[in-house]
Image 1 (cartoon, one colour):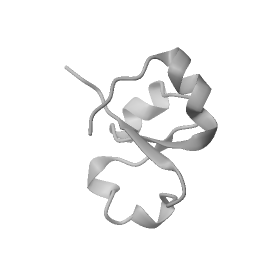
Image 2 (cartoon, one colour):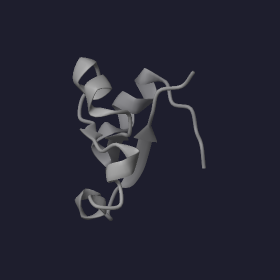
Image 3 (spheres, rainbow, N blue to C red):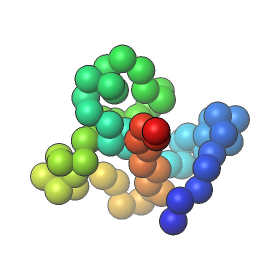
Image 4 (cartoon, rainbow, N blue to C red):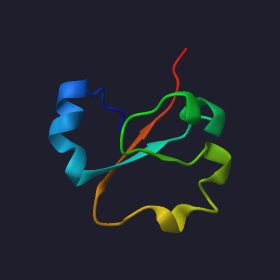
Length: 64
């Protein structure tokens, strides 16, 4: 499911969600949402154990 969230809504729910930035690590290092973890798409399968099962997951990427 794809849902658009504004910054205000994200701040309201940030303690209940787990943010994953799937952009390349170089993009994450330049700027990212506070509290997000960097896991690029090619790394997801190998790092799946880092994703908690007790929170909603929000994944974000760069859109063109």
